Image (cartoon, rainbow, N blue to C red; front, side, top):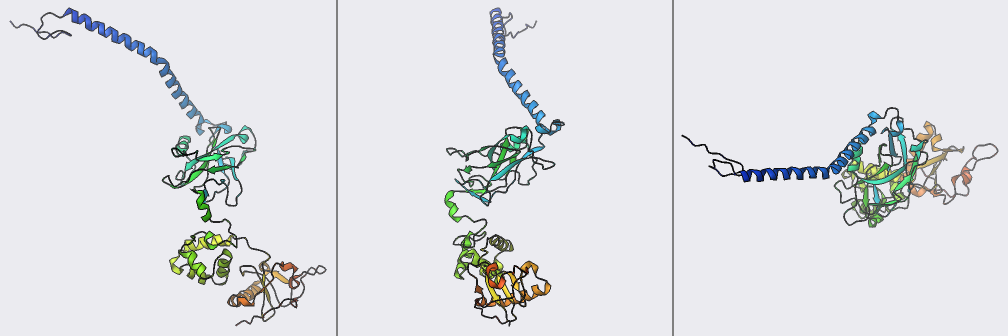
Length: 404
């Protein structure tokens, strides 16, 4: 007869009779564990309820902020958006105010995304807006379809141990849907982030309104401001103040070696002999993009309206040229003065032919100094007839140019 062998919890292999003391001991342990678990659940219950409540509330808020659930409530919808009405410069400097190229304030407005209409009335027209810093790589495609979480994730904070990235009046109040960034400046450059650029963003105190952001730009340390490009440039600015011409760079050195030291000198050569200017800048080695950038920037220069020159041709025609030798007007056949936009086709053709001679013989030009051309006898209007007087050049010493 085979003897049965038992394995009892808490007993020994081969025991025929369960160990009663061991069984009772294990049962007691199970009761204690059960009691401890119940006590733990009771203690954790308030915490768990709070976590669940927060997550539910967060989900409800997200649902309510969705544009799909804002029908009939334009004030609370993401169809309203903050918008930077002005372009920021491509480069800003630490410690300097965030402003436009012309040194005026940057405007932020609240608009309807569909109609582009500024919200000028109602409670949302006077909300508070906070200025933040964003990664310059954010929204490179300019689609403006980001979510609130995506926007928040791209906000840049200051580096460890550094001051807040922007300081000053970072909170502004809209008035009739418009506000201005009046005194905000960067404390750190943008070279330490991967894109090397920042954007400034605008966040509403009303989380249901879509955020706004500026164009991307670099921020350089203040010590680099001495190399800053001027927008617009002055005629007396050194040529390296123009885009694509680096201070003490190859183009700068080539220009100065040809006596072209300022923007005015560059424009004078561009007007009289553009091929020569391009040759100085490298000829075919300078790209069309770089060439166009230089000329476009230089052409934004504000000219001195009082610096004028006269040129008298052999046939009696008198040309009036500005400070960079562009023709601004003429006096034909002893008649009245015409500005360049009043020339007919034959007059324009005549002037174009004369210009080529003038540009080869700039020593024929007679400067008018500080006098305005309307104050000169040659161009003085006859107040009784309303026309201009016949040429009277007796008090101006001309060297008559002969057309070759």
